[in-house]
Length: 229
View (cartoon, rainbow, N blue to C red):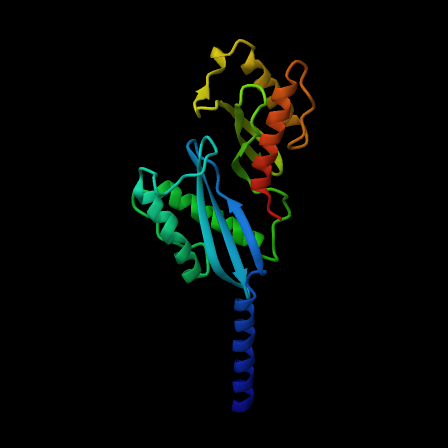
């Protein structure tokens, strides 16, 4: 009886070991945090032999420009970018200490890593997209050199809110009131259509072909960041 118990114990330990080593599916998984008013974080997680092998962390501004930690004036955020990835690997999870002075960045990277690990799991949610708010950007316009940045809020695979800003070549944000054409009216028409349409596919709005095209691209970029699969 004792020998049987010992054998069963060894089998259980081996089974648990195999489960722990196969916790994640091998591959590379990138996911994004919810977008705040000023930034969004990304986490690229590398899974090897069912374990977290490495994590690369990035952060983008509200203009959808990646932050350069060598010149960024907030050193705590750079410290978080350099240290949290190693903690994720050491803990084999999305657990990490919040870096004082970089709470928003730390929290965003933890959320992004949690989402990346959900992608790496074989037990994914049935939804196509994560619920949350995601940042996206368009290509630059051939007329004027500006591009669009959008905040797309998703619930149950539907767009429930949309915010837009136009970024000029000098990285300033254009106020719609300073634009001769009724830009805000076109934006509202697009938002109304986006909330009713299949996510990312709004038909051309009369008189606003360029705006519709740019916003569709920007929204699809945000949706790509929100994908679970």
